[in-house]
Length: 378
Image (cartoon, rainbow, N blue to C red; front, side, top):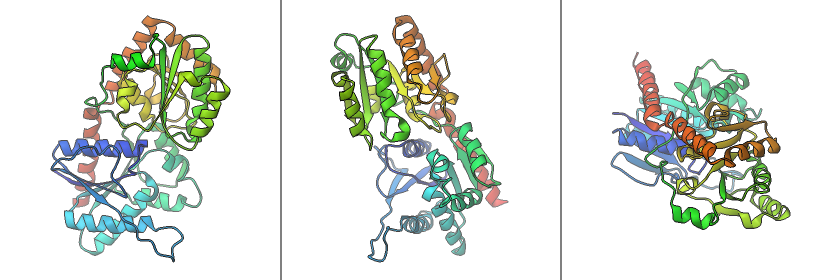
């Protein structure tokens, strides 16, 4: 069994969720897993004898305008790698985790300790931040110096090759779902409380950033509820929340929209939904959509990034061009207006989600780990 250090952001965002769920699954398989971050990951909600958490603390000095987190992280990685005798550092998100891991690897080499670095790219670390000229050289170097690099979709793999001058092969390992968690039967009393007259329930979950286009969710819902009785559940919070609340007031639909804020048990809410709406401007994979599909909720989404690799047009939902609110609303109504069609799409969504069960994806990561360790021994 392996001794693995996982570095991730501890937030509700996709990269942090995937990293945490992967670590928990690896621990269940008998590997020792050490999470290393500035706070405990949101999904790290249980502990076992194989699961550990190490906090990165950053000292504040008047000399520094910004705390040097990357340096503190690299130092922490060196300390944990030596003390816990780690075999692998698996870092999620290129900035600053990959560069910190490469720095740690080089320091460890001077102390007689070898370690493999696996970098997983998740999206905006490549499509947005990484392409910034300020960071590009460091990101390119960190990718090339990693022992293995994975991306969560073919779309992200292609964007990485296009955006960076790298020689390293980028393997595609998609995101996954744990059906022990996301296989909830809807709680009828909860559904009845939200939709007492049998209204269709639309759901959206995100961090309410502009790239998620939550205003399009609201506009799609307005067109839908003009035709059929419906409710909208908005899960999450972020910088656009105030603007979205104002839009709901302007459209006079506040009584039909529920702002639920950040929720740890998101599966309980998804399970009562009839349709998930994801009109994002950019998505490397669409983990939130996969979680909805695992709860038997079909998806209305855009056709950008890796979403079409997950949401099969006309089978598990529909894909539209970014910003095409009318088409998204028409597709939503096509599903929601017919009970039999809705049941068919729900069944298809669940079947598709089963293709991404963690039991199918975990061996792919374990194969990467074995490969890099074997190469290190050659």
